[in-house]
Amino acid sequence: MLSKNKEYIVDIVDIGQGGVGIGKYEGFTVFVDGGLVQDKIKVKITKSKKNYAVGDMIEIIEKSPFRVARKCSENLRQCGGCQIQELDYQKQLDIKTNEVKQVISRIGKLDDVVIHDTLGMEHPFRYRNKAQFPIQKKDNMPVIGFYKKKSHDLISTDECIIQHEVNDKIIKIIKTYIRAYNVSIYDEKTHKGLLRHVVTKVGFTTGEVMIVLVANGKKLPYLKELASVLKENIPGFKTLVVNVNTQKTNVILGKENIVAYGDGMIRDYIGELVFEISPLSFFQVNPLQTEVLYNKALEYADLTGNEMVWDLYCGIGSISLFLAKKAKQVLGVEIVPAAIADAKINAKINNIDNAEFFVGAAEDVVTEYFDNHAGDAECKPDVKVVDPPRKGCDEKLLSTIVKMNPNRVVYVSCDSATLARDVKWLGENGYKLIEVTPCDMFGQTTHVECVVALHRVDM
Image 1 (cartoon, rainbow, N blue to C red):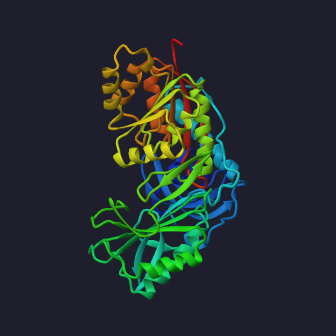
Image 2 (image 1 turned 45 degrees about the vertical axis):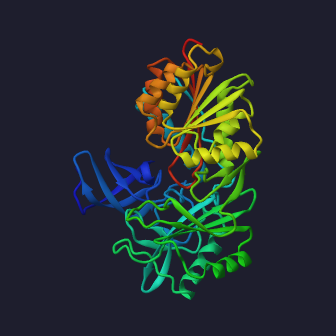
């Protein structure tokens, strides 16, 4: 056990969740924010427990060979976004691959699985097509930026190197708008003031730009003047929307949108498919890597054109429509009605008529569908695709998958731990994990996406 407030020389051996360095001092584990693999650092212990300690980095004694120069400004060092920006990108990919291997082995209890190297980006910066900027007032001036780690204090930013470049210009214009027209800033403690967040969405292929002002009310002043400035200075600016959020909540967007300029929509592509994107639409934030991810899912689905495919958690239908190009029929399920409405629109604008979408909990929709089509051989699913939220699939849904008895299951995951848990359950109920491909959707962070192929054991 290490002594609190005492200094130690620690070797960093790994990176943990949130980018924290995992260090060792004479075999004892020390967690150090900012420590990178193969750093030797001096650490002051701030918390000491029986099995581990937490410390602050005082200085780097020996710099890791994988440590690289920061690309963003020094004032953003405390931003909670790019946890591992100072780690060489190839090493980032290696760590993500290793993380997936570890959790599949430790949680999934599987060691004889093919786990491929993480698919990386050609350019791991400026890849995000959606940005959400909170706004606060400090010293009577508007501050737009990002929260410091583990706080609600804002760091002002003029640029973010993982967001699309157009955001740098947009933020400057919004700051000028606030000052010029004395627009009140929302105070989360008093619940007074108007402007809460700025949300931007950018079509990487189309160049179209949407700007959403989240307001504690239905009216913001001088929006025509703001739209005029945006139109003159922002290439591709297409629509300005006021999103109404009057709730005392940390949820960013409310349910009501008021279009101030344009039609409230932009379009963008994933591969050859075009998608309509509204203020409330979920659309993958890294469209270039999304195509890489979806192509791998399509490969694992192994479609010949004769298959019936179910896409559970289908969202706005992005994976469904990808699969529909090679399947006989795709049935998508999503519990959010607005997402299904978007999915139907996206099928129509892509001239895809072999995809059908249902609103509801996947296990309920699927069960009802098969009860209504009992004995119909044409309705037997060949492939099931699941792309659940971070919490993974609940056991009821997994049981439904097994009951449907598809030949193949393709699992797309944004959390390797819940993925490992779920494939372990599926493995105990008739499905063998064949291979895993991690995909880097969020460079400079510790997040990793995976796509997994499972086959029915008796195939």
